[in-house]
Image (cartoon, rainbow, N blue to C red; front, top):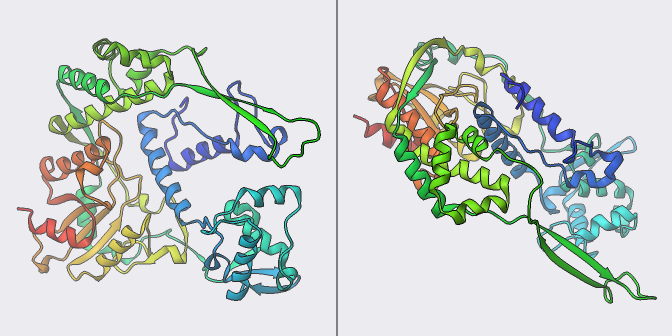
Length: 469
């Protein structure tokens, strides 16, 4: 990063530009003009991020994974049925029978496997314009059918032609509702809207010792390799592959022509002094240090990760938070003006915005439970811009909840992080450290009556609250 983007929108624009504008190792543009259709096969963006940027990238990757998880990946009856598009001036909706015919067409022509996954044979026939004809009853909509099929692996193929019979209009969270005017929420917000700075002191000798042990035990680095493929074909042989002889030979890359500042790169990545990094590298086994030659970038990345994990296990006991004069404004809930289709937006009753846009089914279930609970007065799904600083990256909790005073609840304010599994062994060291820092801030260092905990469901939240003294 050569410039510092403050807003999430600016960061998204930077990442989007990086994904769209690809270059090779020499900085040459790798666009469709140069690569043709292959441009979609090699578009990989590497972000070399500073600490403030890394949490944004983590959240963006999580959001992308959730979005991709919801996209169709197989040619099934459920995928095709109900899709609506124009044929001439008339609208046509795919019926269940037509959907079954499409699935059968693909399978019978070896374009899909038994699970409905599109096979390479479909891509090849499509490229050569030799696709098998669809059945007689599908002939009038053959063009649209193939666009639907292509939409499974290339959503752009369906732009401008499809209307989903189940799709609904978009909604936008652009203003706070009456729940945000409740005194309970105002009190809650006044308790948690502070910005903090932290100080942390830990034993450098212990960190060096632990890092050396972790690197010696867990560091593995893949040898850089490339594959040399050769083929032979005699006179008169066809291209069906039956008589085509192919050889593959794995070759190792002996040395890298790129120079690296090994100590400096690790020091920057792990936020340590060069002197400390030198002591760690001198302390590890010679065989581990030699792994640097196998793959310098992977060596640096994994060593930084192992050191960060050791730091993460040490910082919680030695961290102290202090209030600053700055606070968050309620504008952060509407700054991004998030849009979602109605079927992905939960119309909440006690939330400070009209809808809850959830990242997962677990979050949606949690919001529904909050709405149903008599003891809950008002709640807010916290935006990602609401962050707690930690030595291993900024941390954004999920929920802020205010309870009714007359329900026998000991603490009227609660900050919750919803996770699918609360087993600490399943949480990565850095992620667990961030959660532990939040616990220490709200549960030990803060003088407010706000409490924090990570939970997997609303029932678990109630159990946690009953056990808080």
